[in-house]
Length: 387
Image 1: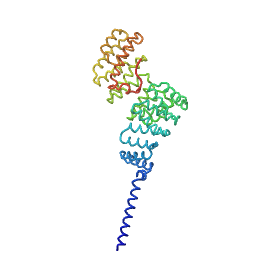
Image 2: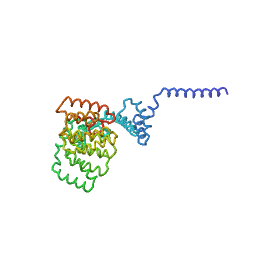
Image 3: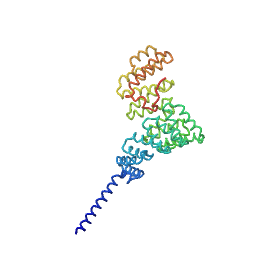
Image 4: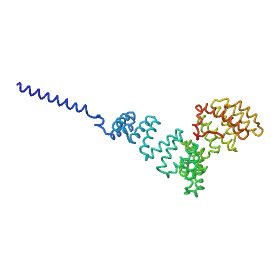
């Protein structure tokens, strides 16, 4: 009886000892995440969470993956970027995508995604950087060569613009078809075949990057189909024909029609600048009226009155005296157009007086840079308008 009791006691003691022994081994074992999941498995789960519209949950699995592999590969950053993107945190997403392409530069579709995002966010310098990265991978993509040309001129890099345009124009594959192309485009516009006109234009634009008719067709086609890409067409035309006034006026009118008065003001200012700088034969009355209208829409009464006075000065410029210009500028010394007119008026007559107005213009621009987004809005984000 005693012997049986002792055997039961020994058995219980053995089981307890074994239990405690294995519990000790488990307690000293590695992180259970590392035992249960591999790095690739965790990335797969994170991807599934993103696909199933639960990106918040993806971050915990990505964090566990990073515990296993402290220096993660490009896939980790791709998934991090996609999770941020699904949550609407687009700049955080781009930061992750940029790390991904640093680790794996051959992801050309992702490089283009980054480039297009920054272009849409009015950051043409960064957009150009990633377009040029893409061209290092695929240097023959004519559409991206044209895009890089446009972006180069937008940030004031004229040499880069000319380089890319020369690359495009060196290809004479369709030079003999220009006339028939223009005929086909005109027919599509007359028949209101907007889609066909847009597609045909985009196909041949890289071969004729400075033929105005193609840009005109692209604008008409996209306006006809109410395309969300209409602004891109206007910007391309403004950049390509940057010394003209007409496309700035037309783009400004489009922006004004959509209640975007600050942006339309930017376009009309550029038209005014070009008219002064290049002694344009354009209809001064038209864009001066549009400038006045923009100020009126923004409830800027003093600027509206300034344009009224400036219209008279320009109409009577052959009889205008230096003293009259100085007096009018004293009255409207905060109006940008009058200051530019003052610089233009005195630049070849009185350098000191012109420099006074340059200084006042610079002070005025710095004072209003935030309220007017002066160097952000418009095709030329980095270019100051000066003589």
